[in-house]
Image 1 (cartoon, helix red, strand yellow):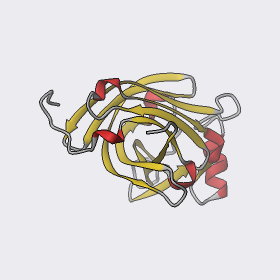
Image 2 (cartoon, rainbow, N blue to C red):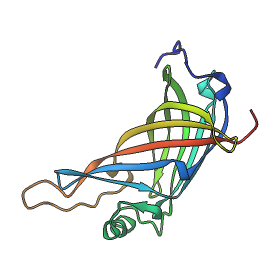
Image 3 (cartoon, helix red, strand yellow):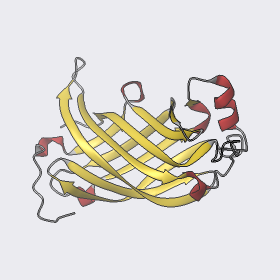
Image 4 (cartoon, helix red, strand yellow):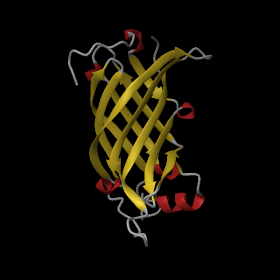
Length: 190
């Protein structure tokens, strides 16, 4: 990261925003049976933040995900993920992320570091986000687009369940890619 990085984002983008869950996706990808990947998402979440183009250090993000909204397009797998083997969603119904630092890493990219809490365990993570644009929608709302991803080890949050495969290896990979496709609307007048 460079303190001298020049942004190509218009300063008029600076402001407070709320994530629009109907136009955003929070997803994940995990290795399955050592040969393929399973993709899923969380369908219920809310988030707010402040984006400061001229001084990214003043930016922040808070995100709350309803863990039970997990969706891998397989009801049996989703039920297993909701159980104590994985997320223990009855005891820990929410997954949260609270940023601790935002730094510009390129003309339209930002490193967002913060605390991710899953199953009552809080660990630091960093997500590289790319600014994908700003537009005024059909209802007159200013929209901000961001996309990001990071790789975490699920065992760092106590998500340890696995099963050995007969041919060797395990059923579920430890590394999980978290994916964020965000459309956020400005919450105050420009």
